[in-house]
Image 1 (tube, rainbow, N blue to C red):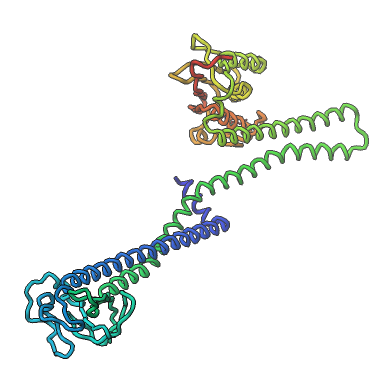
Image 2 (cartoon, rainbow, N blue to C red):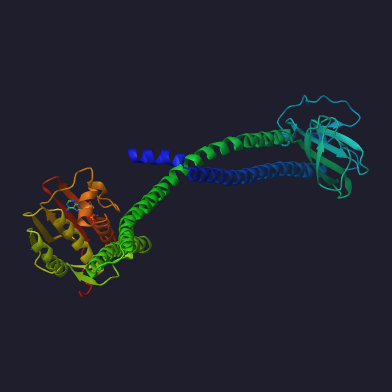
Length: 468
Ligand code: ADP
């Protein structure tokens, strides 16, 4: 957690990461803002359209009902019969003065237009206004149009939607025109409110999105920053490891140059020194290449990494490695014990060379970090569907603080101690990468001064696959 906080603080200080974070946040806010703007505009258009449709349908329905009720009552073209008043009680003839609200307020089938904002107007065929009903706004144009639908403005600039239609008398002869209209004030107010809400809400939403994207960009970049830091660390460590053998080779070459005449023995010694350093460099390059290949395979092939590989017999591999290391065992008086705790042969799908490298790395470490007179035990056992390889030693042990880091590349508990053994701190990193490539797990338990136990779990080959 502390490392996470430190890493985040460092990330904030990195110009490259800060710049990228800003760019991400700005792009995200811009894209989201555009999407929201488009979504808001579409919603507005849809709401306006559906309201408009409702207004038109309402007007058309009232006009249609009036048309059906009035036509049988109309006789002389351009003349309103008294019978019309039974349908429209609040009818007001053009040359009469009428109060706005009719006294007769009894319920009527067509009293919708008696509500505020509705009006009806009758014209004869030459376009002269004959009568009105409902609340006719002042200043509204009385001109007849060819089109059925008109949008008009009154003296107060309030918009009205009007539907005009031709009326025929009971004999089917043209009588005149009827216009049914309603105020669009409520409709316009509603749309203005909607527009203002969206316009005010959009900047607030964009600011909130920008803040959220800034913090999300930071979160998203943390793992990238950690890998970036690891890469930087790796480059520094690799350069450090290369520097020592290269510097030694240079020193040897310079010392040869300075001497005028070298004896054959001196020349042999110098060449052996160069060769040793060269071997070290080759080993380092090979180890790094192997690590990189293992990681690439694990990342790109995922679950298919080792499962497509041939079956390897762990019993044979362990015995082979122990046999090859017995020479080392001879050199130092350390007891190397092999315990095969299974009756049958245990097979895993994998790369035989890599599995040999895994066992050999663990055993070499155990032998290297165990003082003379100690004991190293390698055990093969089975637990459920896993093969277990324990490598236990009675050596120097690893401090609890170092245990989480020993599988990192170039990590050495004690540089001096490791240099003495010739290790570059890659042995356990390679072991872990091999275990992961084979979909297994590796654990360590250790106590300073008492020894360490490395346990490898490898998934056993499913029965049904042929053994090699
Ligand atoms: P190296 O190749 O330098 O030994 P490794 O990656 O194999 O590097 O090991 C990393 C560190 O873990 C070493 O510096 C060593 O001190 C420690 N280590 C590994 N195995 C053991 C062990 N069996 N006992 C004590 N220390 C160990």
